[in-house]
Length: 302
Ligand code: PSU
Ligand code: MN
View: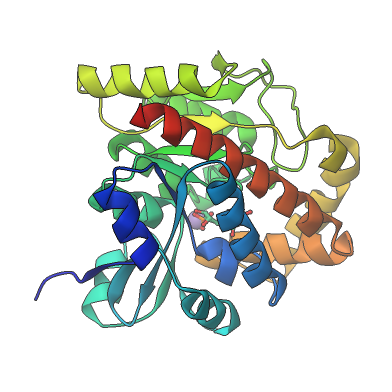
């Protein structure tokens, strides 16, 4: 038995002609947003990539095949399905071996992108060190992945549901370059800034591409993390989102939510408390990240 890597028609063509490709994850579709917005957003994000001169490769495991690029029907099916597995490095092989369907998180999407020779990946927010990790040891597999798999990830910072200072300490320890785009402050997902400054800064896509190239030439493993601030007109200010995050964290503690369920639970709770405003912001930032990732992928192609 071997892995069945399935390229969509669009991706096959892009590979043959050497066009820039941007990877997109699928956990955001199955566990990050409600149906039908999840499918609409996934299609809109793909279109943003196309409008910016690259080809979108949404990645998912369908019946044991690792798909690089999904058709409209496949995207729709995934968006409607419930009880799809949320797959990371630890279980990607098991899901494939068993012939199951799974949505890829940042770590699993990076592994798949690397297999397909895709260098740039756009998402909303990465996983990180959860608040209370000193008790729970809950640290996302995304961080470790960034240190070993050569795919660079454009996100809007780590989700503010996490312990941001600890998340960035771990990234530094793991040797992951964290680059704020166009500003010194690290963005915090729903908010364009935070009190933390990023260790690195880039002001155009070429600077990011150059850094990726130099790291590759030096043989340094892993990818870069690009923290791209949510557009100002779409952000939810820190002082507004902070008490909402705290309420969601309290609800998770009361209900004893743990492991893989924590992140989807918190996102859903915040969606309910903000009456959908968190989702609107989430959509704006993902599109913004897809645009920047496409420009970086294009610059890397030159
Ligand atoms: N950002 C979002 N929505 C999501 C996620 C990130 O706006 O659903 C997902 C990503 O797939 C990320 C995962 O890799 O959450 C992290 O999960 P965990 O904290 O369990 O490692
Ligand atoms: Mn976790």
